[in-house]
Length: 268
DNA sequence: CTGCAGTAC
DNA sequence: GTACTGCAG
Image (cartoon, rainbow, N blue to C red; front, side, top):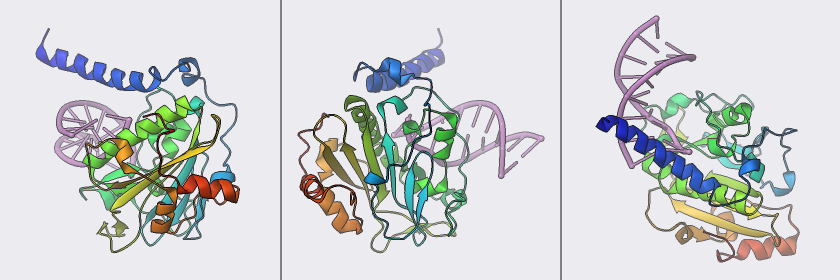
């Protein structure tokens, strides 16, 4: 066998290994994971939606976002990731499109071209693989932020995979993701898309006993440190961004969960 | 998985 | 602008 063929086989095995790790190690639900699609479109659960500091919330079938026109990107993207959403289907990657639902005009993908930055998904394509429509819907420019490739494909990707692991382990989670759009930020493209210096991701397990939250704040650079290194309290992200993340929660529960930066309840 | 870019129409 | 293909972490 030729060396190139061996490399190809090795690469395939690595990829299968990665997905297999996500889906097999975790469980019992491989049958559900390959489920045949949903019976109904996901409904936006406003109960878990953050506030908008920009006044422009946009609802899509697979996720909801708050758009910051000043920064030409979402200040947050929120969605529910059910265990049954997980799938190994491989959809072809479509082209990015301008989100026509953004009334102030979402950025054009051309801002990112040759910018040195990835169009980094906020709601990952891999989290919306229960249908082609849901998958393709993540390729709107309102759902991306400029991210360094090493960061996006590195520790940020690891965090996204961890979230899918938790969705499986805890039978579904809610996720809120965004860049910190504060301070003097570098920008790219003719529309001046801001480049965040930090990204956050907040996850809620609402379905496996006592509700629990975990929040991550990462500098915009790759790292080899363990994911839990970046755990912070939701409160600290609220202070940083001005966003109130879970106004729908009962105040007592909200305050206690959001104050915690303890990750011991979460399986890493 | 996360992506970009060259080439051709 | 879109499609196909190859490449990188």
